[in-house]
Length: 568
Ligand SMILES: [Zn+2]
Image (cartoon, rainbow, N blue to C red; front, side):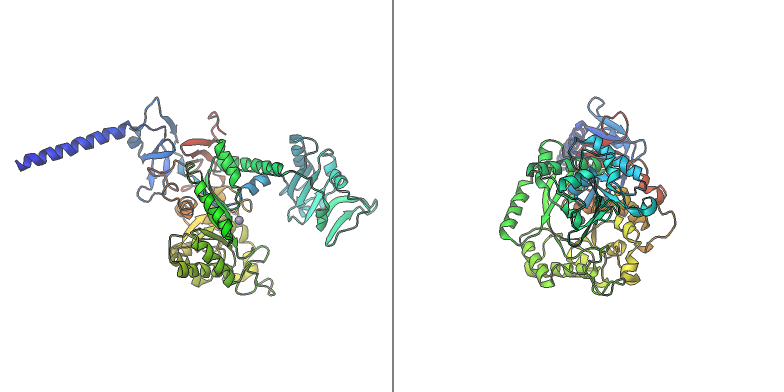
């Protein structure tokens, strides 16, 4: 009798299971990616062949055969990856998005070696815009122009007589203006040089050549434009940057410089093609903190597209300009150790207040003293306010003292770093701070071993937005296009697996979103990038040639390099 009872109970459960099984089979995917090499960044299921997507989420990850059952020939869009590599969408944990877009709107003169090329690039812009519109550019360098001669207004006048043109030198300390700018600004042969500036004049005619050095560039009377025009300009810049991001497979960003309203408007208009974690400047002002809280609540229900999170501060400057804060002086300038922007007491107080309000904090720190001061401040906040899942961050974390490496794990502090800095900085860091401190620069492998959490970003437009550059730098620690084997402190190189993880799941963790994105996993958002080459198989020198084939955001293809898909 007892056995029969069990028989019925077991039969009942079997019946349930079969039914559930059948139910799963009727869940039909909107899109299926198959025949791929899918690196999931999910430790429980690291590699797969196929993914099923429904709505904006991933519903299954597995072999082609396992995923077949989610396909309905009529209803499912099938993408054959033809063996290509797919990874989670890249998440840039430190970017200045609108600034990058702005830079795209200007004429790029980096690397220009002839006056004809300079003219060609300006002319291209002139043809694009209406008469009277101001044209800005940047990046020229007379050191690489013929005869190392400074360019003059004449070359601009020849191609732009009806548009005011201002082109910044690569260092931003001199500008080349055309005749129209000089006329509008009232700069003539009789205009005296301003304090700490120089209007370069022709030796024979005495006329301004168009070169305005240092403060003389401040004499340019920029057009008066309305608030509305400024706003529209910024919106245009964000739109341009969105296009680039899709092309690079970037599906999420942590935007360090606000532009909240613009992102929100683009979202409402259906134009926002990446997820934004927005940061705002830090403050102790209670009213301002209250308004930040309101923002936080306002941006909760938007399909995980916009989230307001961290408050940003600075403790020091940069290595390049010699303003990063160190314990000991620079090797190439013993008169200075850099300058912290706050005292330890000041930063402690600020962090304490903001931490107590429950915000995440991200502070820019480059020098070993700057980093030490921030870690001290975070430690002090834990002592005063108690330990919580605060995930405070340090932005850049360039140079550390050995004692501070383990403190990232102990204090739960995230290192938000930019791998391409290695390729950009390795040429001058040793000269600037000496070998001992250089050895403790960008020590990500050592930090990971000590249990630190790391997120990858670019600081774009300081560096290129293309994630391939960062991945290349992280796994090689070489200059770009360097075919030699000269890796900079090669023990700090990361594996490609780790580098991809930090660029996806690592960044998702830094915005408290590791549960919804950062890996290709059932239940997570379908943000996936398909690449032209297998990053895990190709020689490292080929990494930067890798292109994006598909960028998928929330189950929608937002970029494809394949002709005929209609999305490019
Ligand atoms: Zn930055």
